[in-house]
Image (cartoon, rainbow, N blue to C red):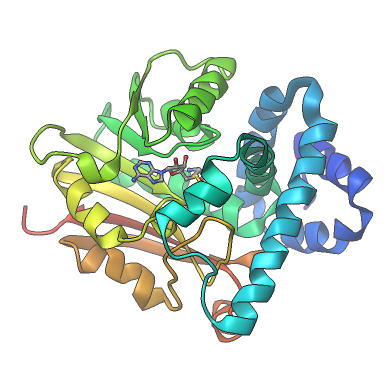
Length: 304
Ligand SMILES: C[S@@+](CC[C@H](N)C(=O)[O-])C[C@H]1O[C@@H](n2cnc3c(N)ncnc32)[C@H](O)[C@@H]1O
């Protein structure tokens, strides 16, 4: 099985600026089954639309982002913890630095295609949600970033509308720009802090949090707030990484149980789960060697 043309174009653009990354990319693509490769190609087609004539620059920013992650990995493996622990530190170093953020967002866009764990998590989301979700449900994504999850959910789940929230006006503006470029008009955008959600004011059928909870000081408090925004019988989808140092990751999870506890300690019952390690490494080995693992859960508020 081989990668589709859009995936190959992105891989070529990255290898043109970073030839030494070839083995990583090969291994990461070889780990995917046919369904995961098809999802990767869909993501790559959307990423090429978003990239427009900036693909070479975005590829350079992907390399820059991976260099930053490698620095954090060194710190993590030496000290056994993430370097930063407060939102104020992450805000000062990352979120408030417009130049840093612009490169980082570009890097994360291509990681969605090139990293096995990111593409496989998206594939799991798209394949699993339809059986759990009522048709035409009310959909919210928190911190949608590049917008690809919302775009594919709208397309694949037959949603006529969606809601997107982010704490940062800049981030939500980037999501709006991306979704409009991809042709999705019926999305309602809001600057909204998870911690300020009042119970009983929202009733969503599906709330998506992809790569959000590890950025928070107290993700369990956030999940309690989110529980109040989910309809009885509704769902959350959480994708959060274990042992995954990054310049703005604050909350360290070291095991599958640590990740699952974000839900089970906050009034949710897990309906489906999957774990995807970097480059398709076997889960046990990845956990033993503290290699990054994406933990994905669908969960429902329990007792409602
Ligand atoms: C790494 S991005 C996630 C991007 C995208 N979901 C992905 O999977 O690549 C994290 C986002 O979470 C947002 N965020 C962080 N804390 C938040 C909070 N308390 N409420 C709402 N959004 C928050 C940040 O502004 C940022 O845009």
